[in-house]
Image (cartoon, rainbow, N blue to C red; front, top):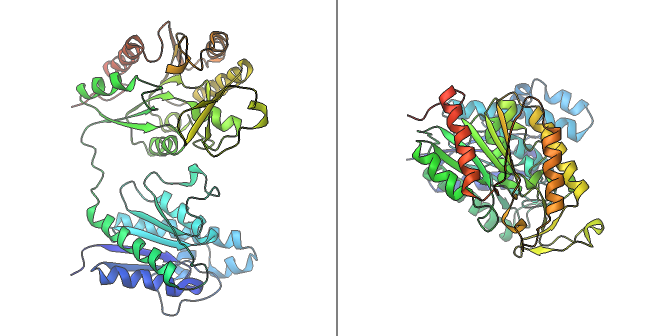
Length: 412
């Protein structure tokens, strides 16, 4: 007896045997499958449940148009658009419990689009020749995507790729069986933070918000975490956000790979979600541990956080640029936005004696934040450090006033 149905997506004209292997493995584990062909030029060995013609038509086009374009990028975008529509339709109808997509760069490009079209909690597995590659920016990844490297399988089946495909088949079916639907019983608040060696406000804010009856989701703002935060905000998953860790924005401007995409600090405002914002860690630039430090930062001290992350620090003009960019983004908000500026410091390492202690740089940053804040953004300044209890108390007082005024729904 089958209990869960997995949607298997791929280009069946070139990867029929691999996709059929996945399908048969799922069936052997008592799972059910639906198949979707996203080929353009060729045809599967046997018909799929959803044909390439149906996919193209769902994308408001046709296979003929994809072929006549003479461009593989245009053609695959047609198939991607249709695959997103059909996959979401199957989810909404309760006909599938998970999805697995196989591909090289073309198939992975489509897979990333499809996964972003599906809701949080739906198991999403991508078996790709470029999994974990620098080709894939954080902003292309859905918050709960799972990727498996398709090792040794670019052209046909072999013992190595069978091992990868078998694990992937078992993983998606197991995830579908174990998955719990996302059921938010209390109003959800999104908070950005870093580890408590750097930012400690979360120790005060999280229990205080939970005591008020809210559920709190904390996102590690080191690229992927900020990306997930932004995507969930865009889906209006939160009733309010406390966006207090902003180093991803500076990383983006500096060209570091540790960023959350081009739209950091924008999704909540666009979605109409009230947002409290503070510039935590916006004096630091984060680099991957394996990265060489760019030449323009070579004369600055390096803080080795661990083998994965190292930091250096912005000069005064760079800090002013980051302050202006943050205010520009907050000024675009369609929701109530309140910027809290902690003049006493913005992360633990900038206290006196710390690696990042730079009173003049902090003063320049604070001044630029104050002077360039948009008229639509409320601003509160405090002598407190961002990790002081006074700072958290200010944030909670603003939040409580929003609840009192009906800006944020009251927890039951």
